[in-house]
Each structure stands twice: as C-alpha cells, then as structure tokens.
Length: 139
Length: 185
Image (cartoon, rainbow over all chains, first blue to last red; front, side):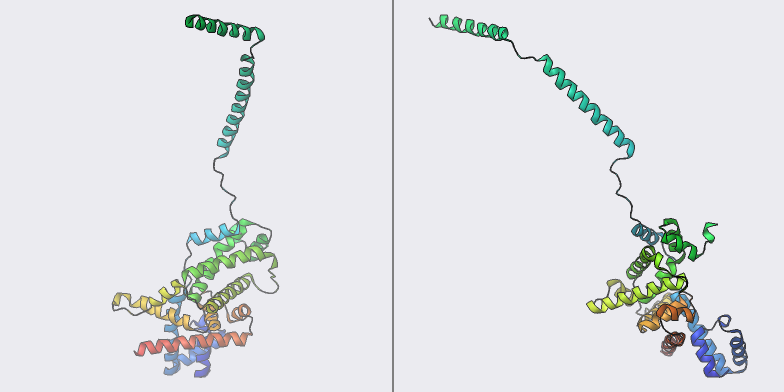
C-alpha cells in the first residue's frame, strides 16, 4: 500500500480500520507502523473523525416529535364536548322535558275549557247589572 | 417478540394500515433521519419538518416499497435526502433563509470563553459541513450520522458506487483542510 492509497482509504472509510476490507486494513497497519508520514496522515484523519462523530452524531429525538408524526399520520377524531354518560343523561332529560311539556300543555288546555253560553250570559248579566247600577248613580 | 420484528415485517404491516407497526418504525428510525436533516439544513425546525414529511410518506406509500430494489433503511434515507434537497431548492427559489438556520450559523462565531472551546469546535465543524456542496454533504452525513456504507450512499443518491466514493472522499478532504486551517490560525 502506498501513501496515496492509504490517504484515499482513510478519506473514504475513516480511521476506524475495522470498517476496512481486512486485507487493506492489515496493509495500512503495516504502513502506519513503519512510516512517520503515514502515521501523521492516520492521526489527522482520526482527529477529524473524532470531531465529526461528536459534531454530527445522531441526536436523541424528543417524544414530542414522535407524537407529532403519529398525530399527523392518524389524526384523532374530534373530541366530544361531553363524555358519553353526560350525553345519555342530557338525552334522557330532554325526552322527559318533552313528555312533561306535552302533558302540561294537553291537560292544562283541557282544564281551561272555553265558557259555554250560560257562562257568557252570567258574565253579561253581571256586567249589565253593574252598568245599570252606574246609571242609577248618574240619575 | 414484537420489538424484534424486522423493518420489512413492520413496513408490510404499515402498508395494511397497522398504526402500532408504524409507531415502531418511527421510534426506530426517527433519530437518524432527523439528525441527518438537522446537520444538512442547520435548522431544528426544518429537521423536524423533514422528519415528519418523511414518515408521513412512509405511512402513505408503504405499499409502494419494494424490498427487491432496496432495504427499508435505504428507501427511508432516499425519501429523506430528496426531501432535504427539495427544501433547499425551494429556499433558493424564494431566496429565503430560515431564521432558525441563521441563528445557528450566528452561534458559530468564536467566543473568548475557554470553557466553550469544545462547543466552538463542534459549531465550526457543523458550519463546515453546512458549507459543503449538497451532494457531498448528504453523502458524508449518511456515512457519519446514519452509519451507511458507500454502497448505501450510492443507492440513496442514485449514483454509481464510484461516484458515491468520490463524494465522500471530497467531503472529508474539504473538512480536513478546514481543520488544518483552523489549527494554523
């Protein structure tokens, strides 16, 4: 392996020789051990790799992003204003109120039956009597 | 055991509308996808948007995944890479740079405090990564951040293995040169 080969492989695979093909890794190790320029090259790339790993390593993702993705993929159904038990109770109350209203309306109407003729006559007499009494006062 | 199911099983279930399988895929891969997007765009907001778009595409297009053509991870990163390229293209079209990105670049200015030296070094390298040509940047991030091979990079970017290797070599060479320049100053 030449210095140029070593440099190309270091730039391509990095300074972690376990990621290299086995034969090339062995050749690189021999060159680095015997050549100071190769050692400097290796140290350069190892330093760069270390910085790169720290600068561009995967970052943990907070659960908010995961939640946001899942939410966007399957949006929730609209949240009901009241829970189901409340809705049953409200429906029951509305039905009961309707029945009660109907009953009051029906039976209340029947209790206030229109006046018959006798009734009107009686009322008329009373008013007429009252009117006559007023006339007597004027006289 | 459910957690031991491989990606292929999960993506098949996702294609049938299995929400639990989808949640497992997201949990397994969201960090890598988001991290590549973060270092590619330089913006946390953009990275979150890219991650969301990528997984929504997985959810809606899982039935179109062909395991004969690529592994699930390669398919996933191809979607992510295309989304990242689209994002930058649209930004260039409208001549707009996100506030988030500009803030993160502003944070790369050197500071006097020695305690922040490590942070400054990492910020400088991240700025160097952001300044790489797009395809070199994506190739390098797929290797360094997503731990993909040169062949995977070729498959994700739709180029030959030789071309992918060139992208990786050039990216590392540029970063190495910048590191030397910084060390000299």
